[in-house]
Length: 439
Image 1 (cartoon, rainbow, N blue to C red):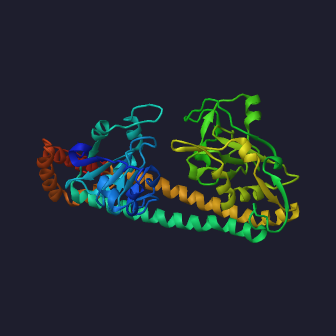
Image 2 (cartoon, rainbow, N blue to C red):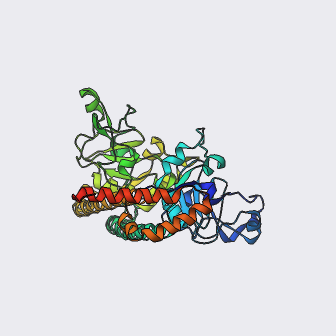
Image 3 (tube, rainbow, N blue to C red):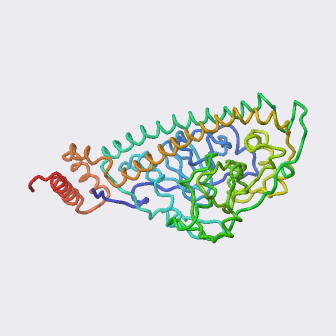
């Protein structure tokens, strides 16, 4: 099924945000959410932000109605959000106020599907920029509104299931820290008076990964990247590959019990970790993740993993970050010098026994989450190829033809009706051929 298409500028008003003068603090305060790139990409409509504009600041901003689709076009290009109330944005964001031919949620889901298209249209610079002119030329499909609503209904239902899965994952993720605090307390405050030691002295070594050229075609050995540990466990589906000889393999190969630590990332993801349990085997230590190899005489991997995932240690590392545009980093010295509580090995072993079962459950749940994400990605792909609503469309073809004819007039699209009729006949012929009916 081929729907007509239109440029963003043909179906939406495009608004670039701005920043009311910071030198006047009266522009900021209780009022309208002021959206910046970190507020995007959360899947939920944006209704709250860290900074808000006062009534005075709103007069200097460009207010956007509920349902506006916001796209980051400077820096973190392709981050998308939809306004759940009246909002304003800063100048890094271009917003789409869709006209009567586009359901806002349909436009939102489409924009979530094409981050790579946004990036490809951007001008490469020190800070990538997708200017308003190029942004306005990006094309999107324009199905009949009734079909858009049907697509949104299906995707909303699937997204609700993803939300429930995420809520279950969040509950599971809190169990291990709760067990840790019950047994040992805060590892920085050290309420039980355990020995204190720096993280660096608890490791046999701490290093960066190989910078060898990676490929995505499966040639060679799997190598880690930031996405490999994005959910707190080793995800074998989010690796790339390097072609190594035996000496390089032995040098960079991970060992069971090694901890991978995210030290270059957006600030909220700094300090994310995962323990390598031996699968996949082998697995190569790649760039942008630090490898921590615990000294087994002093600390167990599961204990150190739990320490690194406590709120206090994550916060301490974030305070030590070096910040740049849309990215933060931690150097090895700042990581190594943090002092943490180190209980006796027998106490750590008791914790590890309990934690092992929890970690296994978390890994199992994470695999289920990954499967749901794959299914959702597939649904979004099918939604914008027309496949998702193919049967529904056959049952409503008469009404759809009338809708598309009206849309064609409004958008000045020629031959729209003849195109959909041709496509519909082709679908019927292909369907009959597939089941052996005479044409």
